Length: 214
Image 1 (cartoon, helix red, strand yellow):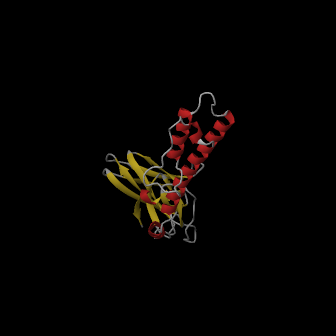
Image 2: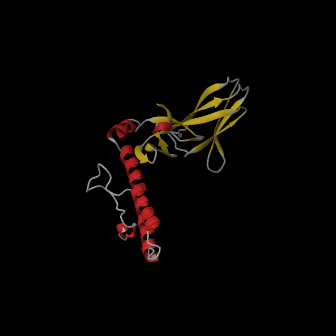
Image 3: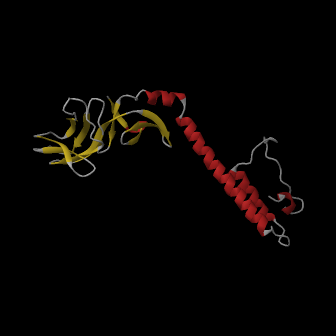
C-alpha cells in the first residue's frame, strides 16, 4: 500500500489515536478507513495508480478473509472447550432422543421413538420402512389419545441376537403427528459450527437438539 500521508492536503497529518500503542494491529475497519481517506485526499493531478489500487483491494480482501477465519477458529475453539466436550462425552454408549423420522437400532436390538399426536386416533399405524420402500416392521394401536405416543420395535435374528436392519424411516398413518423423534445410539463426540455434536448412525446430532437420554 502506498504512503497515505503523501496524499493528504498541506497541513493535514494523521494523528495517532489517544491510547494507541506502537505495537497495535490494523483491523478490517481501520484498514477501510485508511483506504477511504487515501481516495478522498489524493492529489487529483497524481491519482493512485490502477495497479496500486488493485493491490490494495486484494490486501483488503485478505484482511476480511483472515478476520472471518479467526471468528470460525474461535467458534471451534469454544466448541472444543473442556467443559463442553466433557459434558458431551457422557452421551457415548447411550441413546439420545432427537427430532427426526429416521430410526436406528440400539445395542439391545430396538428401534424406538416417540410421536406427538395432534388429535386422538381410533386406529394409529406406525411403520418402519427401509431404503427400498419396504415395510419391515409395523404395529397398530387404538384408540390413542392426543399427545406423546412412544413406540418400540424389536429386531433380532433366529438366535435371539440383535439384527441390524439399517436406518429405517418412520411412517405414520391413521393420525396426525405434530412431530416425530427417534432414539439414536451415540458412538462418539465431534464438533460442528454450532458446537459439540454427537455421532449417531444417521449422522451428527447437536447436543442442543437432544430431548432425552436413555
